[in-house]
Image (cartoon, rainbow, N blue to C red; front, side, top):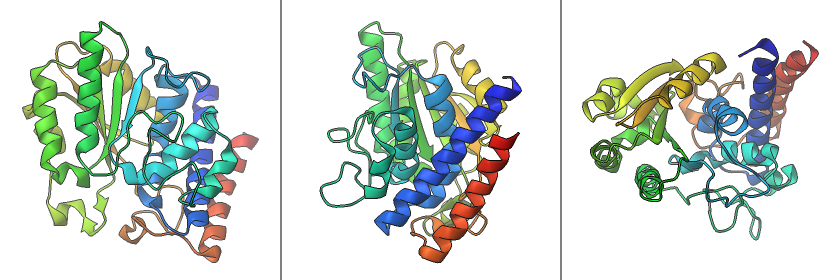
Amino acid sequence: MDNTERKNLQILACKVRIGAIEGVYNAKSGHPGGSLSAADLFTYLYFKEMKVDAKNPKDENRDRFVLSKGHCAPGLYATLALKGYFPLDELKKLRHIGAMLQGHPDMKGTPGIDMSTGSLGQGVSAACGMAVAGKLDNKDYRVYSILGDGELEEGQVWEASMFAAHHKLDNLCLIVDNNGLQIDGTVAEIAGPEPIDEKFRSFGFDVQVIDGHNFDEIEKALDHAKTVKGKPSAIIAKTIKGKGVSFMENQVSWHGAAPNTAQYEVAMYDLNKVLSGLEAE
């Protein structure tokens, strides 16, 4: 990846973070912390990795994406808007009655959403189903799913993982947004799923551990995943909850809370300062 491409992705990721904060602020509710930690992952997937077309969101040959940690929809919505699936203005209507964007992804009402999600653990099963369908239909599309590290406490994740390995779903790539925090505290304190990488290996996955905010590492990991044959892939992306907003970073209190006006202004200042710096380079 050259410097220009890396900078363009960083700019887009910053805009994704701005869009996520805009949505949660205007909704007066939502989940900013995990949306911000996953912003670089969303950005790389939609602007570099996946074969998708905003003008043809139901293309049967498209790559599929499932946001298994569906509460982090604000980050996904910002990404989809920037990609051209719907106007950016929709972000300000998040969670409003009659608006397009629900609090969790809705495949029936929002262009670009491949699966409705929200109940943690279930998105991975849906992604497995899509991957099996691709195999049965002799399609070459790939299926990607982002899940949270707290979500790994759901037994369904591991049932689906057994299924994925048994069926040799090498067209499936799970990405764990490993920010270390969940709604009630640190993941280590609540249920301690570590070592996450070894768990997925024991379930038959090819596993990589990366810095989820480093586009070069994200690229290398996803490129490698496409070469894996006969087994599914899991990428453990080490991230910072609330990434990019000074008072939100590594703060569990921002798992599911909306900023007030003063906090919103600080968040926008932080993010726009980074954006201005990137655009001036």
